[in-house]
View 1 (tube, rainbow, N blue to C red):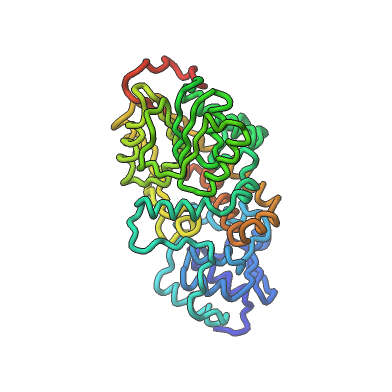
View 2 (spheres, rainbow, N blue to C red):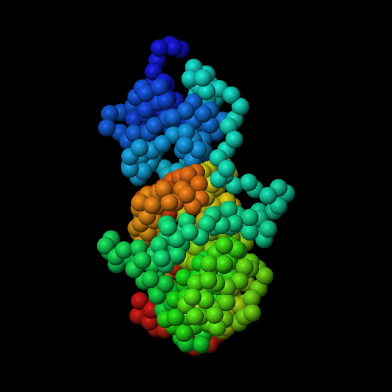
Length: 427
């Protein structure tokens, strides 16, 4: 190869190979100061030959993500337009790991380019934010689920407060329009859940995957419910208990570090599961549904809120960014499969799709993260902040494109009082 070819030109050709495109979708600025790529395209800075080495050892999404998390490459402009530029030619989204894998011939060309750039060597250590799976521990066993939850949620309560805002609600809000605002949207979502569950003073609510206690506080304060919240995250439970105490609701709310499979002191009048089923897995759904059914009184309602793929496979491959850095062992179950599992035990009363609401929520979270970037880095690490920026921005695009959906399913256990005739009971 001609040793006089600028570094950026070699990088642009290699990136096209990785992405399966005719040319680089980005304009690249290399560590030697050279630039290549379409004029006017989003600018990405490649700061070190280590970025190339990461991609050689993990061609595609994972190598690129590791390089970004480690700071070997930087997005210099708007994160959304940068991601969209790479995804548009193939029509696919990074959260599913669908970049084309290089053929053997293309991989050889990639190695030749890396050699010419002085980037050949042993595989670099992955950034420390990558999840280390427990050895010889069965997928979705209580121990492995606890490790996966700890990886995602125990990264600092202050960091999450910075990103999520004062409500500390880590699921999509319900927006009247784009001007609603994040905090108001989250309050509206909490209230909608309580209305769907038909909460009344003195009723008992079990909140499975209670997070930092947002729903528990709302249900006790606004509806007079007695709430048991369970989570696998020690950090979430600590802050949730603190918030409960500060609200003077210790007598109404109990927060526990507990797996849903460990049972609870039922029966309950209502059960909420918001953003928790993604950690259950397809194989675990029958037992999960049965456990929640057993905990409800006859006629009791379940509010099941979960993200879903819009068709196709429902698990992330192990070599994807989302599986390694964001939601280890996460599985998204289609709406059809979710309804099938619930209908084995419950009567389904209502289904509401909130896809566009999650896109707005994610963009609001990214906005908060970017506005408070230095503080976010100080609270965790630059790598962790980069992980959250990348995953939330990619997820927002996925929801906007209809690749992801999120649905609230309201279901009812047989018996007790009859359900309302129409949805006006809770809308």
